[in-house]
Length: 102
Image 1 (cartoon, helix red, strand yellow):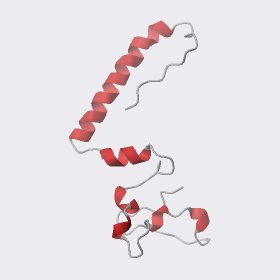
Image 2: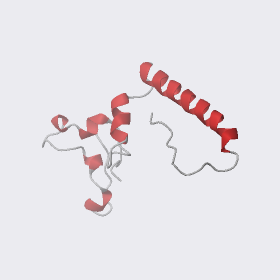
Image 3: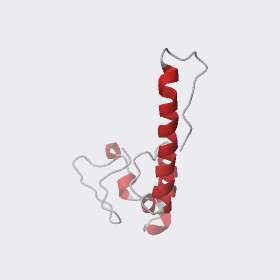
Image 4: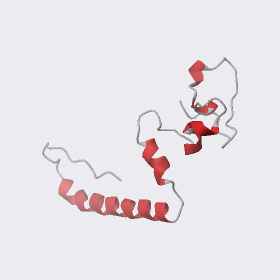
């Protein structure tokens, strides 16, 4: 997980009271993240994709793998709703997603 960003601006009044709590919470979140990755509750590669622009709502990695499709393209759920026919309901055959591109 990214480290908490701190600006160069002077800290507001009372910051020194909550800073240790924020640091402790940040450490616990990192431990929880590592635990979830290690025990298989979260997919590290999927989380890495979520951090990239355009993939924030990606449902699964299989939907962006072009080798799994007939035409060598992304899954239908990756097509923006504005580019689809009006009223057309789509659903991914792999995971059941109904549109994760936004």
